Length: 199
Ligand code: IMP
Image (cartoon, rainbow, N blue to C red; front, side):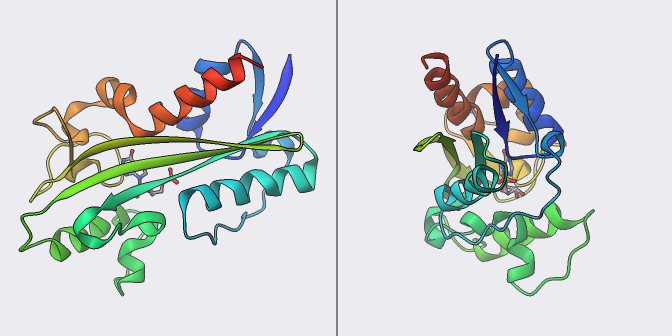
């Protein structure tokens, strides 16, 4: 069986990827290869950040690797929060804790959109795969709108304020079964899986 590294320690993401690719590839996490570095993510696009992580593993461990980077893009805010999704509140001058970070990120976004009726947004994931000398990208997008208030208890991040097109519930209300079928991450992972199953 071929070995490939997924440059992440996120247990949920690893489980998802192993469920899809586990019969063909041994998927190793950063921890599995003994990497505890805080790999820099200094890009201005999701693809750049994903590639930075995957190339770090290739350079330091000489192993084939893929990595992902995701976030929310709001049209009326010129694509913000984008690559800054995880630290949007902080870069807007708010102090956050690990516990309230998602909540404050959403407050900042709702505040910026408060008088705006144009609320189109999308979640985007880019996966970069470094395979030998080759680099491949796989992007997944889910379009939707930003609600005016938070709804639902499920999910994480911006899920309570994102309503995907074709549904009248937020990601947090829809639950993981539906979300995992239509999400940006699911769509990017499906493209990666399709590619890897053909090599
Ligand atoms: P990551 O690159 O997957 O770690 O995502 C970066 C940030 O984007 C997260 O910390 C969240 O704030 C946001 N984000 C990414 N994917 C989702 C999602 O599926 N739901 C809600 N927020 C998300």
